[in-house]
Amino acid sequence: AAAGGRGRRALPVIQVSETPSYIYDHDAPRVRIGARHSAYVKIAEGCDRPCAFCIIPKLRGPQRSRSIDDVVAEARGLVADGARELNLIAQDLTRYGWDLGSDPATRPTLAGLLRGLGTVDGARWIRLHYTFPSAFDDELIDVIASEPSVCKYVDVPLQHIDDGMLKTMRRGHSSKVTWDLIRRLRARIDDVVIRTTFIVGHPGETDDAFERLYDFVGEARMEHVGVFTYSIEPGTVAAMLPHRVDPEVAEERRARLVELQRGISRARGEAMVGRDLEVLVEGISEESDLLLEGRWYGQAPGIDGVVYLADGTARPGDLVRARVTQAADYDLAASLDI
Image (cartoon, rainbow, N blue to C red):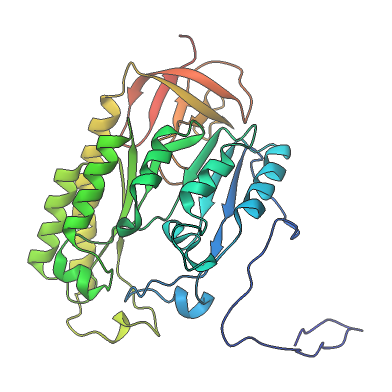
C-alpha cells in the first residue's frame, strides 16, 4: 500500500508479481540529472547468471531485454536532449536478446543493437558496461572494432583468475576463457581499452589463489582495474560458504592489487604523452578554475580518471582534439593548442 500524508488515504495493492517482470520502454517518463552530454541507457533488466556472491537475480528476476527499436528510440530522444555519449548498461550486456527468441540465428543480439545505435545521428560515443567474459562472440568483437561510434572500450568484470575461485564463485568459465578473450580483444580491436573488477577475500580464496590473481594483473596489464573486498550478501550462495578470509587479510590483498595497478596505469599514461586524443569536455575542473576537464574514450564517466585541459574555451559536451602532455597515476593532462 502507498502511505500518504494528511488528507490522503492508503491505496490498495492490486497485485504483486512473484517474479519481477517489469522492463521500462522509451515512453516511460525519465528525469535526467547532471550533465546533458552523457547518458545511461539500460538495455535489459534482471540477470540469469548464478554467481555465488550476487543477490541481483533474486531481487530483479530473470533477464528481460528491450527491443532494438525501443532502445534506438530512447537513444534518439537522449541525443535530441543533448547527449553525445550513450553508456549502455544491464546486469549482463552480452546476454542481451537471449530471452527474445529461441533461435540464435534470428533473435536480437548486442552486435545488432550496436549497429542500430550506430544509425543515431549525434551519438558520438557508445560505451559498453558490464559484459561477461564467456559471452563474447566474434561478431560482437568485430562490431566494436568497426563501428565508428562504438568506443573501443570494454568493461568486463572478471572477478578472479584462479580456476578454483572461479568455480567457487560459480562464474561458469575458466582462466583459459579469460586469457583467450583478452588476446582476441587486443588482436582485433586497435587501441582497445579494457576495464575490469576483481573481488578479493571471497570465501575459499587461499594465499595461492590470490597470488595467481596478483600475477595475472601484472601480466595482463589492463588499462583500468577496480578491486573490492568481499562482503557478505545475505541470501546468496557465498554467504553460506565455509573457509572465510580474515577481513584484515582481504584488505591487505586489495591494497596490494591497487598498488600494482597504480604503477601499470601510470606507465600506460606516460606512454600516451605526445598522443593526440578526442576529448569530451565535461566543464571547469574541480581542481582549478583555470583548467577544463574532460575524458577520452578510454575513460568512462566517474570511474577511470579524467583529462585536464590547460587552455581553451570549449564548453561542456564539446568534442575537441588535444595532445597529451603529462600523465599521473590515473589522469592525463593535455593541451588544446596543437
